[in-house]
Amino acid sequence: MPKSVTFDREQVIENVTELFWKKGYNGTSMQDLVNVTGLNRSSFYNSFGDKFTLFLEALKHYQSLQRDYLQELSNTAKTPKEAIQSLFEGISQELASEQETKGCFISNCISELGNQDAQVHRFLVENKDQMVNTFKILIQEAQQQGEIDASKDAKTLALYLFSNLNGLRITSMIESDIQGVTDLIISVL
Picture 1 (tube, rainbow, N blue to C red):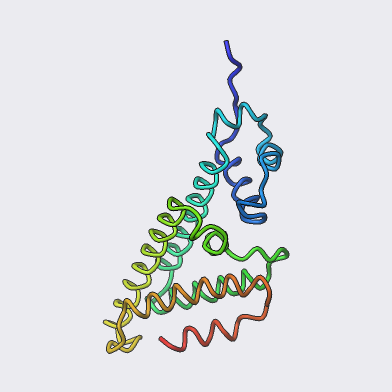
Picture 2 (cartoon, one colour; picture 1 turned 180 degrees about the vertical axis):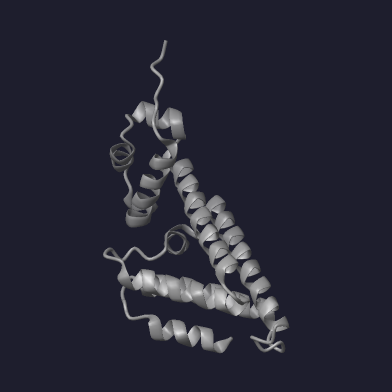
């Protein structure tokens, strides 16, 4: 009878997410994964399949955390524009204060694997679509409340915010003073 493996799957996914975020997909070895999970190779393969499958699970985990963060901001902000501002200011402050300049896991993935694998590309496009749609809804609400010029196309502004958010996250890896850029991004609204 095979020995059953018991471990905290959620904690393993969090650890693996941090590892892939820090080292990237290509920079992460199987030995790195074995070390961070605490599982032997056989248990690793039985529990998670392969490195690529686990990488996709880590991306989805990170995406879920980001979506929850944006939802929390939307729920606590007094206005839709304030929710957008809070997101950019919060991320800007978080990126500026990081001890390790890792940027954003998903933005890093766009740079590393965005055009390398069809499954990753689909995930990234779906993530972009979700983020752009969330921004679009907030922008349309802000336009209805008179916070944002209603003559500006909401979808274009949403894609502008998404593009700039990814740009900030990548730029923060080589420049920590991004608050002025964040202010400029919001001023365009």
